[in-house]
Every structure is written in structure tokens, then in C-alpha cells.
Length: 159
Image (cartoon, rainbow, N blue to C red; front, side, top):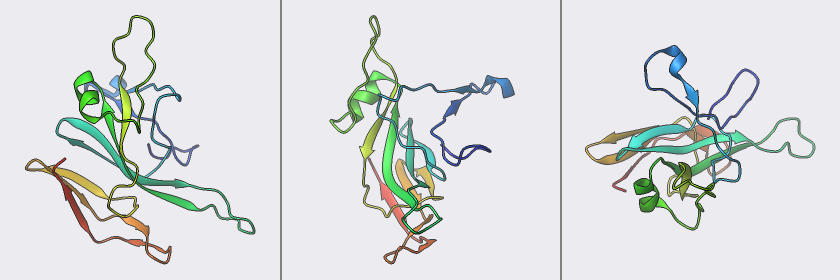
């Protein structure tokens, strides 16, 4: 996710074995597979050895009579099932498994863990694992009047 010079919001994810600048490879995906929407200012964290994408924002439609697009803030949580073990822990009917090609036993895919987590929709927050728990702190998001403002809160989970 994030922004590029020619794209305001993307779903691109790159991985590296840290063997040099040319070692970065974009993770390919199939649009038929569950996948989080293009967004910016999400947070990515490794929790219990699982990669998670949390919240962020994207551009919505331009309301009639306006020249400014709306901002859509998310409070969703996605995990990357890179093994059958991870998939078996987190899979649900919210994120169906991808279709396998003949001869394939498993392909990595994204699983929606929470469409509306208990924290307010937000972007630019921080998440960190500390002593076996995941902490989510602050960020920016719409308040009760729809005004985008800093959020001063702290959320923690054990799962």
C-alpha cells in the first residue's frame, strides 16, 4: 500500500531477502482473491510471526457540487497467510480461500480478520508488538463531526 508519483493509493507490497537493493520483488496477487483495498498511511506490523495490515485511508467519490473527493478511513485488519498453518488459524467465511491450480496444495493469500475493529477508523497510526501483545496508538481520523483530527488513544490485544 501507499502512494507513488503516479498513483495516490496502491495495494503494492514488496518483499526482500535483504541481499541488496535489487533483491526487492513485488508480491503478485489475483484480484479474485480477497485483498485489502488500495490505501495509504496504513500500518504494517509483524505480530506472533504473522504480517498484518491495519487501517489506513483512501480516496472516495467526489460529492455532487464539490471538487474535492471524500476520504475513506478504515479500521480493518488483514493478515497474510503465507502458510497453511497461518491460514488454518485465521481463515473464516469473511475471506474465502483462493482457487488452487491443478497440482497446487496452497497459495499465500490475505485474510480479513476484522472489517470493523473496535478502534475508530484512522490512518498514520503506529502499531508495535511488545511482550506478546499488539499495541495500536494514535493516528488521524474523522471525529464525531467528521473533522479529520489527531486521535490520542491506545488499543491493545492479545489475539
